[in-house]
Image 1 (tube, helix red, strand yellow):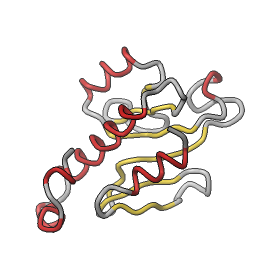
Image 2 (image 1 turned 135 degrees about the vertical axis):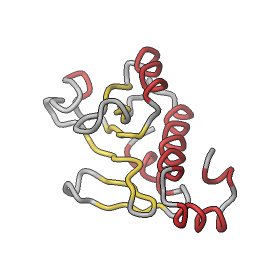
Image 3 (image 1 turned 180 degrees about the vertical axis):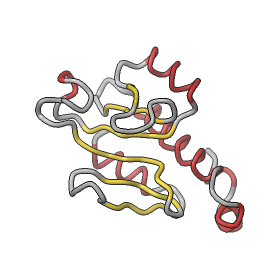
Image 4 (image 1 turned 120 degrees about the vertical axis):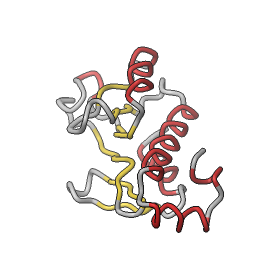
Length: 137
């Protein structure tokens, strides 16, 4: 999965929109004004996540702390989130070695975690429009 594919998939989730609060290279994906994903590109030096990831796109995603710990053991492309809470967020480097279905699952999981934490009114509005399967894959 590359930058454009990740962007397209994140935008396919219900009621999602993107903003660029950190500049044109970093897209932030939100549902009801709450961020669930950040998509950027590692710089040439790779100072964000390490020199071995220089030039690759990466996603910051919300993640259950226990699951994040396990994922970091399984996938070398998954790291503690760059510039975010290392406990609740992960960075996923979009290298060809990272399975596309796993990236999609992590995007879906991040979205679902954020939707579950919305106010009751916001969550109810979404639940009246979309099925639980669409919201909480």
